[in-house]
Structures are given as structure tokens and as C-alpha cells.
Amino acid sequence: MDACGREPEGPNFAFTTAPTCGAYARDPDSSLSSPGSAAQEGFREGGGEWSPQTGAVGSAGSPGARVEGAGLCVVCGDRATGFHYNAFTCEGCKGFFRRAMVRSTVQACRLGGRCHMDTYMRRQCQGCRYRKCLQAGMQAQGMVMEVSSSRAKRARKHCPKRSPTAAAAEGSRGDGLSQEQRQMVERIVAAHRKYSIAPEAIHKFMSEAVMSSDSHENFARMRDIMTDHMRALVSFAKTIPGFAEQHEEDQIALLKGSAIEAMMIRSALFYNGKQPHADPRTFLPENITKFDIDAERVEPMFDFFRSMGVLDVTETEYALLTAAVIMSPDRPWVRDYAGVERALEPIVALLLLHGGGGGGGGSRFARLVSRLTVLRSLNHNHEEVLAAWRRKFHHQLTPLLHELWDC
Image 1 (cartoon, rainbow, N blue to C red):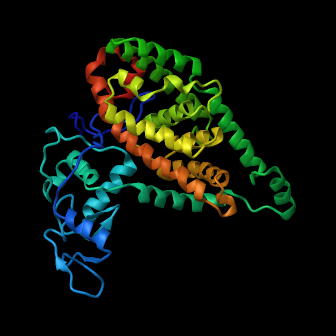
Image 2: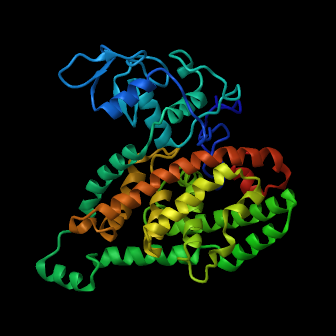
Image 3: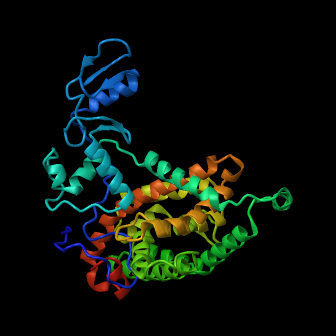
């Protein structure tokens, strides 16, 4: 049963997206003082060894002075087994955090986030357990890179070995892609460009919001632009090779899970002026707060936009990243994980080649993939925003957004 009191069941709606009703949002400003924190700092700063059996922190080869709570999981207080995802945790919390980030949904706390986390409550409240993980400093960066690296290795089989003559001909074109891969890139980029919200509409939307102080009027504008985004996302997804071959339920789950992340990528494209005729001057943090979004949730969005600008992500890379986000098989309710992953691998191969990985220099590919980690965090971060919109503007939602947000 989820946080809304419903029994889990497969999706039964027409095109729905990311957050489930009970999803928990990350609090980026929270802090924590808990057993084990001192031990972590001693381990990081002193360069010593930590033993879960003794709870000791000290230099190698010398008796470690026992630090109170050093052998405890910083999340639930159980015996820690090591340094997992940037924090000392038990195996249970390590696995929980990995599942939470991969599946991108966590049930919200029914008591408003006030649960005291211990070995009993960790099984009772996902929301407080997830928040405690984040407060303790757990990070998904390594996890996503690990998963993406594994997919990249499998994706290399989609980079066919070519004869010296063919390789020389393709090398002269400078991209290292086969004809089939080049056609796939062109198809994805053309569809990404075709199924997008016109820059003029975004400019009008932002300009009118800046001039208005009525939250209901501004939400009506946001509602319309998000509905347009979802329609464009559905149309784009249908053009991605392999999407149409998935079961209908999986297509719905993929759209549901990726909508917010895809919108963030589209926004970064606009913000950095990579979309033809885009005017990012109206796309400012202070203007976004007009839509009942707290400033502390707006800033991480713009940090992401700016990071994409620093990377100088190309229009082709934006299109491939969007396709990869849509075809991520680890979304809630996806049934045929293997089938979706098979469709994803050629897209990862294109990112790998485009990012330099085909020639052995995959540093750009790694940096592009690291942006997917940030997108997952932003997805969690905005689930609370969407929940607030559902409560406040329920009667203003379009039928599509009612389905989109499970209202």
C-alpha cells in the first residue's frame, strides 16, 4: 500500500509521468548529527583504517582509538559493514539507497518526516530512511557511473568492427559512426527538434508570468506549458528506435518515469541557447519562483543548467541524453527490464562514440553520464513540488495532468 492508501498495481492510464503520489522529495539544506559521523570524518581526514568489528579508527598498523558509535550505520544504527556511497552504513541501508535511486520512487512518511530511524523503523518508513541517507551524505554518483559503465561495455557490441577501408572512409567524416548509427542519430536529433515547444511560446510564457502576481494565473500558464511538454515527449518517444516495440504498459511506465528529467534536459537546452531562436534572458531563477517553487528547489535546477553549459553539451548530445532518459529500464512498473535495456544499449553506444569513448577517451562520456545522476536527484527534489501543486491547484489540472500526477 502506498502513501495514498492504494494497493500497488500496474499503471492503467494513458500517458503518465514521474512521481508517484507517495514519493519523497530530497531536502538539500538538511543537516545531521548522528552516531558514526565523527568516525567518518576521522577516516577521511586521518587516512586511517576503520574496522566494523572493533569500531576503531586509526592509522594503519597501530591500535585505533575507539570513537563512540564508530561501528554503527549512520542511517539506522545497525552494525556498519563499510563505506558505501560516501557514508558508513550497514548492508541493508546500502541496498535500500541503491534501490531508491535506481527506481526513483520512495514512499513518503505518513507522520510528516518525524520518525526516529532505527533498525525497526527502517522497515516501516521509507521516506525518513531515505532522508536520513541523504542527510548522512550518501551519494549516487558512483552508483550511476557503475551501472552506466556496465551498459557502455555492453553497448560497445553495437559499435561494429569495420574493415580498414570502411574505417578509413568513416574516419574521414570525423565521427567514427557506421552508416546505420549515423542514420539513427539523424533520426533522433530531427525528432527531438521537431517535437519541442517553440521558443516563442516559452518566451511568452515566462514574460507573462513575470508581469503577474496571481499564483493561480501563473499555474494556469505552467499547466499549459507542461501539458504541451508531455505531448511533445510522447511524440518524440514514439520515434526512438525500440520504444514502439515495448509492451504498452512499459511504454506508459517509461513516459511516467522520465517526464520530469526530460523536461529538465529541455530546459537546459533552452537556458544555454542551444535551441534555435532560444532567448534564455527571461529564464531566470527569480522568475521560476513565480510558480510556487521554493528558491531552495530552484537553485539546484539552475546549477544543473549551468553545468550543462560548462560541458558545452551539443544539440545532438541533448537529443541522445533525452532518448537515454526515456529508455531507462529501471523505472517503476517496467516489466520487461531486459527488453527496454536492449533498446537502450544502441543509444548508449552513440553517446559513447559521440563522447569520445569509441577512440578510448571516454572522459566526456563519463561527464555526460554523471549528469544523469543529477537528474535523478532533481526528480526526487521536485516530487514534493508536484504534490503541493496537486493539493493547491487540483481543479485547474488538465485531464492529461490528472493522469500524469495520479490525481
